[in-house]
Amino acid sequence: DQQVKQNSPSLSVQEGRISILNCDYTNSMFDYFLWYKKYPAEGPTFLISISSIKDKNEDGRFTVFLNKSAKHLSLHIVPSQPGDSAVYFCAARTNRDDKIIFGKGTRLHILP
Amino acid sequence: DTGVSQDPRHKITKRGQNVTFRCDPISEHNRLYWYRQTLGQGPEFLTYFQNEAQLEKSRLLSDRFSAERPKGSFSTLEIQRTEQGDSAMYLCASSGRRQGKGIWGYTFGSGTRLTVV
Image (cartoon, rainbow over all chains, first blue to last red; front, side):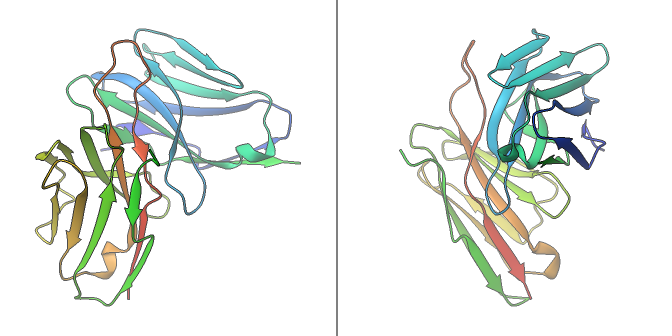
């Protein structure tokens, strides 16, 4: 039972354009959402997060949007840079414990 | 602090052998987590500790797997009688106490890549 779903296994975006990565979730007990970035042979690194009481959080080129009614969140990267090529994981935490549930990831390719 | 350290980075073992991995979390973090990641999947939760207490174990953690955090600092994950299906990246992460308004998240180590041949 996938509680966090990333339905696009991969995405290719031209350098300088906007990258939009999508994520859907099913568990209404999730109260905190995170995006992690992962390069090959490394552990995931924290990118940005958002609490369920907000609908937007921005950090430099990265913005996360949360639509609670649709149980949907998205990560926007503007402008996309070559170093952004990586696998991005959407993740969520319940208000019951600190365990994070991850999606399967979306591989982002930034094209020159 | 150098972050979360995992040792070894890579391990190749023959089927049926036992292996043990070590994780050193960020020193001030009281929670430690083990995840497993296979190709094409996101990290899957295995177990976590608050200080030395193991609070939850996933059903993915069969009887052949055991994890310890004896003094509430480093942790070990042991797999007995390894099988080819155990081949994966084993990730350790740590986190501190929940902050009221601050950013919270796990800090992951670089992982241990296990290959069972």
